[in-house]
Every structure is written in C-alpha cells, then in structure tokens.
Length: 66
Image (tube, rainbow, N blue to C red):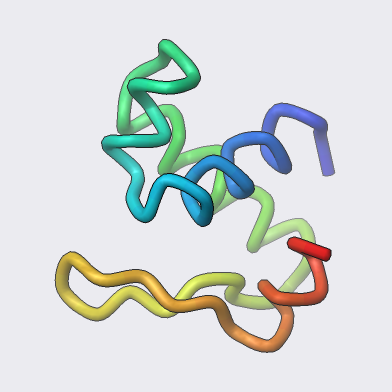
C-alpha cells in the first residue's frame, strides 16, 4: 500500500469519480484508476462498487476511508 494509492482513493470518494479526482490530483484518469485498482489488489478487497457512472463504498472501502 502506497500513499499515492490512498490519496487517489480518497479523492475518488470525495470528488465522486475518477475523472474529477484526476483533475484535482493533476494526473490522468487512467493513473487514478490503476492506483485504486492496485490498492484494492494489495488489500484483497474491492473498495468501490462501480454501477455505471456511480460509485459506492463497500464495507472495506468505508474502513479504509476512515
């Protein structure tokens, strides 16, 4: 787990999406997506439920966010 992965995850949650988080972090949307996916892989748990353009925190995602 790396700080940049956590930062990306937090921004995705706070901004409501990957594109908005990427704009805030001044990196590409694909970089944000990869960082969050790597964080989920490192933790062995999905942190976000992706339903179309909507994102919802999983139980594990709520714990990580806290």
